[in-house]
Amino acid sequence: MGLLGNADQYFHSSEIMRSFQSIINLLRYISCRVVLLVVAITSLTACHKDSSTASSEKTEEQADSAAVKFYRMRMQGDFDAYVANMHSCSNMPPNYKQRIVIMLRQHQKEVEQNKQGISDVKVLRSETHDDGKMVNVFLAITYKDGSNEEILFPVVYDGKGWKIQ
Image 1 (cartoon, helix red, strand yellow):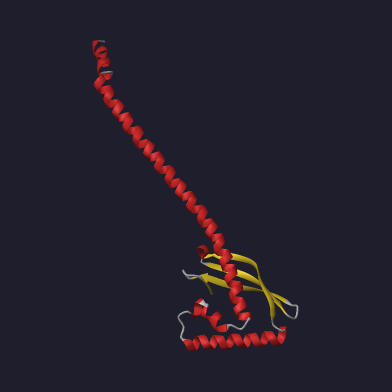
Image 2: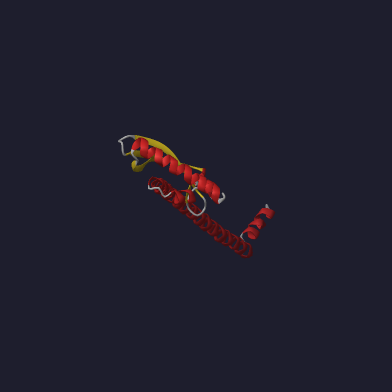
């Protein structure tokens, strides 16, 4: 019993209590910093997710607008600009691009003969793929003869802007 009676004085001595208090204060300081760090990381991650969601919606809208703009280039006979915006033609030689322009002109003549031309183009819906880098835009084409057609018009983001796939 004498040993246990003396143990109390060692456990409650002022020197040991100060050491424990220093350790407790250090743990409080560290845990407070860890909690702040976790809150900051969580907040930044949440903000990043929100902005990427908004950016993907904006990206799809931009892809839709680009698809309509490109198709209107084709409607209006601006085939050189249309080919300049074709991703598949970006590294092709000029004679290849010129052959594409010739084929587009021929197709336009057929549309003029068979359908009297195109009167309107509008977006029906879009499907985004490859983390927003590729969008299948479904366009409604209205011909001057009153007929309609739905076409798939894929566009790709090349890091600078939208291009015709």
